[in-house]
Image (cartoon, rainbow, N blue to C red; front, top):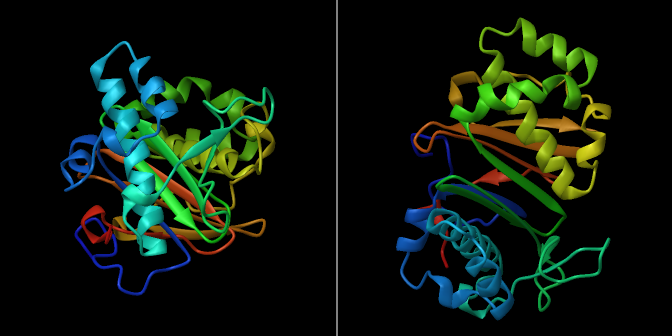
Length: 241
């Protein structure tokens, strides 16, 4: 394990893996860059008004390829990433997938300077948020938390961080299709621990899912990955692609 509690090698590839890294570190990887993206992805990247947002978008779409490539044992450059929105039937947003590898499920998330991605042989959802956003996000707690969750957060010694842990877990559940943004308050995660013993990634069961979450102090980020099989947190430098 690394100091962040992430797996330091991927020799025995698990069924579901998740990783988090800075956008800069992802794009410093040999062979990583915008050239890996499809024309649709490049067009979406060009829409960002600020270069930082564009960089995070590209890094997230590269990182998810690295995760999938690690599982498949192929170069990241060999993978095509697509998206589809079932509501409007457009292909420039919505759930990401690999058209040429329907047996591999993927998910990605990006925030300011930090990206997360996951890939596996089962549906997977991942979310990342900066820990310094906890206080700002806390304002929406009454609208997105169940009653018992709200009580736990208000009584916690660090309410902002406690809420952030619930937030990334719920966002990951949205990504996997367990709930929607409008239905967050109906999902009650109050039975899951709010503190991470020793700071290591914590795996918790929830309604047939396995919820893995951790705080990556090096990157100042809270991360959650959800799948039917136990996800494993893997360090960026352990990905083989």
